[in-house]
Length: 592
Image (cartoon, rainbow, N blue to C red):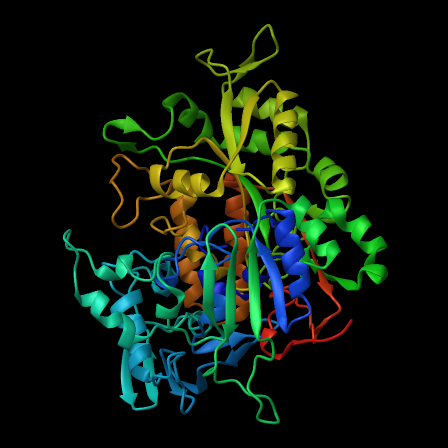
């Protein structure tokens, strides 16, 4: 798992937040040499696939992003997923469970030395995240109840701030790890407008902003950014956390992200000493395990990962400028549940596990992460779709499909079944999965045009044009299902299989929402209202059954959470939920 993924807040699970699993690598031998020589310093070197899209946390909908390093909220999570104080030193929950009052730690400061106060907290929520002029996915996870009301946030003392919800909201405390923003730097950009009448905030702290102009409250500040090459983070001199002896943390002085291209070259760099960490893919596990002692690293196995990998069809039946987003012929197929179920039976997951994952995985049947206490397994009654071409063909027949003389699947109007499947290029595992899906579906007479594309183009298709057939993608996930509420909310910013255009995007007409789709949305709202954990789990069980019966997403394989970390990194307390670097503040760099 990528370092940035691990540190990114759970509350930024959105599409491309929410949570995406991205390949890592390096771009040149020169980078390998320079990175390797840098390993002698007190710094941690990792790698990411592509350049960041924004330095503004409210506008980010991708992972990895910089905000796990430079931002901090009122609370945080430890390696076991337990809530811990961050900017807040304590909190009190009212007897009716509708209000939480936070007391901030004393003498908090921003990285420019300015005081961090409850006014910053109030600004962050009232002026930014609750502002309808700001198109932020974060707002989705803060909407409460069927009326989707937002909480109220008010200052009650110089060091205390109160959050009040219209009704009990079970995951509310956990959502307040959202990065707090500096009012003294950003308030003017909220009130001032551009020539189109939009807040200047929307163009503030973009990737062209000088790092020196960014203000943070996290462990690090962004020191430099060279597009296509690297980001360098340096220790924040005003970060609040200190150890038992009063020494300021983190101990690591710098973190470096190399911007890279492939897992193959990333492996070369890790083995040569240029990277301190490597998310171990199944195809390289045996090699790395064999070299573990000689290579001066340890492979940590956290068991089933929190991430999910799935295939989805575009179910959006809307039109834009009088033209359908999806070819109407294909849309009829995709919106037929028996067609989706037949596709699920046509995919040989066990072959994926054996050949692509080298046995280091298991079938994934649920949208909820396997380590989550709300996860339902197939042994506990979750519907599953084990490989069965016979069942697939039977379902196709029930849905009105048939085979022509060339044994190709055609619909009831004699249209051959053919569609395009896209994913992000550079992720070797995902590319291999797509290739196998193409092969599996060819065996039942379906032609798939599998097309890996650049990550930026993938995001544009999903978020902006909304024009795609099939999608192969992965989300990071976590212990709390409500972190994915904006995926299952029919109006959510990450409801990618039937996405409603978000604020500022061209409208569409004739979008339709299925009954099961709305039912899942309603159940997520109900689960958030339920404070009894046993009853709450039963609600999420129902959502998992509905998703598996209707298959807006066809889940594939759950891999093991594997990371190789150099022995020079001291203090690793590996977490299957939050990865190897959740406690970065107390890690030290030393001799192997």
